[in-house]
Length: 96
Image 1 (cartoon, rainbow, N blue to C red):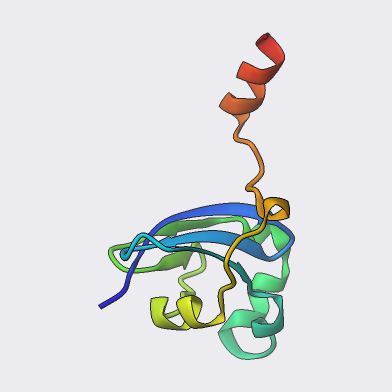
Image 2: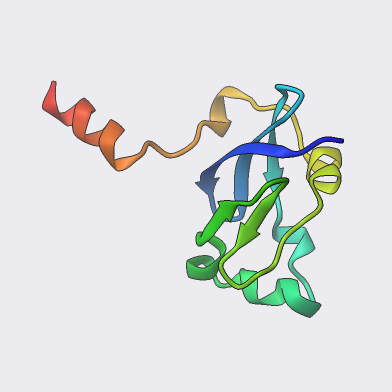
């Protein structure tokens, strides 16, 4: 059974997701946020409030996607798909 083991925000509705088989994929969820419980994630401030539970990404509002679905719709990353640097990484860069 595949599960999500790491996730990084890239931009807009795009995440870099690492799965339990070691594969990292870039997932744009914008096309999947229409209707139902997913509609609330169109608000970027809500979309950015996520974490990991034992098997997938879960948003603060309780919404989640099956890890198999995320794996299926994901694409292999390109150099343009780098996650945004964390605050610590930015501080380290500016401290040089």
